[in-house]
Length: 528
Image 1 (cartoon, rainbow, N blue to C red):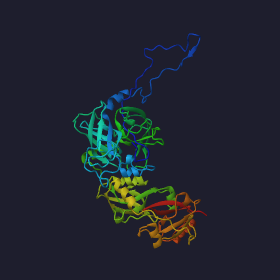
Image 2: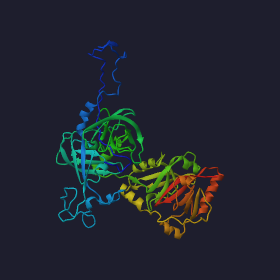
Image 3: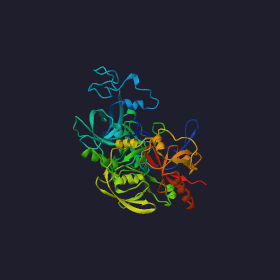
Image 4: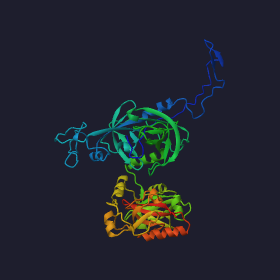
């Protein structure tokens, strides 16, 4: 299966229990170092002693596989193809074979007898084709609860799990969590007991320790691979998970399977691989057991995960940003946008504030802040330590409930659209600043660019592509809204900030840029 994330998805693993057997030549006769062979040839055998393998280097993973593989299942999913999604695929010229959505507006007509991949239903209207996909999973209880990836089952209409002995069982979704890409299923029609495995939350393998995976790559169920833990704390762009990097070969269809240590305990759930080609290149990522254990228990108990929410869009506050702001090597998260009427706006948080602490804990990055906010409950008060205008202050925010990832994405896409047209290319009325020619954001320009009334700033009319602003992607139609903690309402405001930065000996200016309904901060180098 192809991931919604970066790369492709991975899956099941099985393994544990190492054989540290010594084979120090018991009962074996070795040839002499210079044994003569027919024809006068001499074989030079090594005179070094034969060693037992060092601890942690098993001679075989067979015992581990035999013990844990019965708990690993293949997951086969049937879903209908989304006609609208198909039309959005680059290079896709429409639905195959002239198939159109069911019903007058793509709605199902109530006919559940859609057993094939095309043709017409009983009403004579064409049906959407179905698609098959597969992944992996594993039992975590004797009564039939199974852990897998959310992306394996999120669009499923039917789910079947295949056990090691090829028994096929229907399953239903108990709960899903998009944010961590985890889901829990439960088999139907059979009470068990089923073979199951446990999460290991205490003793983590070290980097370099062996792991083994068992899963359903490319539909080949019951496949075992082995490798080592390559690293911990990998950030691959997902908000709530520090991934384990492993080098055990994992491929499409391995998604949702377990990673085992050499004692047969689950240390992670495979969820993604880094791959330019779509196949394994030896870099895989697993959700740590402590995260998976916590989320799956909540899904089983209530079917829904709730996280804290403050209604703010944030960025990493980088070293270059800190230098531009005169804050040395300060780390943290900078507020780039506020949700209208959200908890942060109500509490007085401002765009441009740099969050450096929360409830007494240090904030080192935007991911750090997001995860700490997510841990609290709705109604809890968060004490944010922020830097504003070079001074520290505390802002108390009452947490809300984080919307679903789908709702957040919809809000991002709907909060002000991109400019419909670029500004006129005539000569700018103001001298260039930071390699950019700027103009006033008057009513005419605002309407032409479809910029909301609440946005204030100076519009970029031209960018010198050889400048730092050009190299960092600024373009015509962008709106400069802030510079070094000052609001920008006209081109001269940015020019004044740049002049002040030069006098103070700073090499860059931190600029807020509005585009496509969002604001982002960029440090732009001062030239000359």
